[in-house]
Length: 290
Image 1 (cartoon, rainbow, N blue to C red):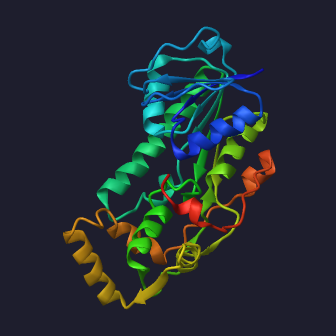
Image 2 (tube, rainbow, N blue to C red; image 1 turned 135 degrees about the horizontal axis):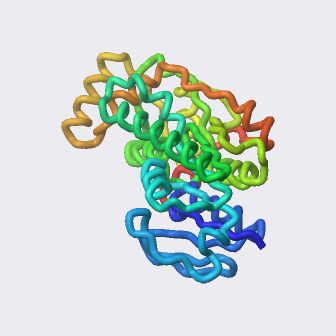
């Protein structure tokens, strides 16, 4: 029975990964800020990367088959660099924001891209020095657990109002990816030697316009909500009012990107470890906070 440490295990991707590895008979130690109940083959530890708890007997670095990181990549990179852990296999989730936000008009977003790039370099470089096999996975727009900051946020607003506004021309292409497909990818690439030292984009299985993506979310709500497309000047006025009310902080650059194509190539992941993401067919449960 293989053994793994999972960091960020209580997040939306980490939770799906825990379930995936449990089903494959891994023995797991998962770290969370809040206490959780153990389960057969799964031990929860209360802690975080800045204050890691002691691992149980039999789960020392030399005994682990893998470490999976599904939390903030920069925090994991710091921990990995500082601890000098020499576990043979590492699979860590980053984000396609590493490339899409490099030239953002928002300084905070540019900083996110910089920190992601630095974290990837630290992890891959450190793994090479220690003779370890590390793989970085970069999801696109994540959904499926009702815990994302984009589609679930849209659904929450639309439920309250019965409608959701978009500026006309919001036709930039998107590839939303389900959390379960990300968990399957992490489990699969862990067993493939050629994935060592690589970073893979993990887009969803369908490329569609931003407007169509939002329309599908609104259509799956009970009752369905209306999509209202507004002329750009009117939408900017609405957005300004929402900002003054504290309801649209940090959305400026995201609105600008609604007309941009954010498309990534899944072919390397498909070729190397059989990545097979589903088409975008949301239901209400996927965009409802737990």
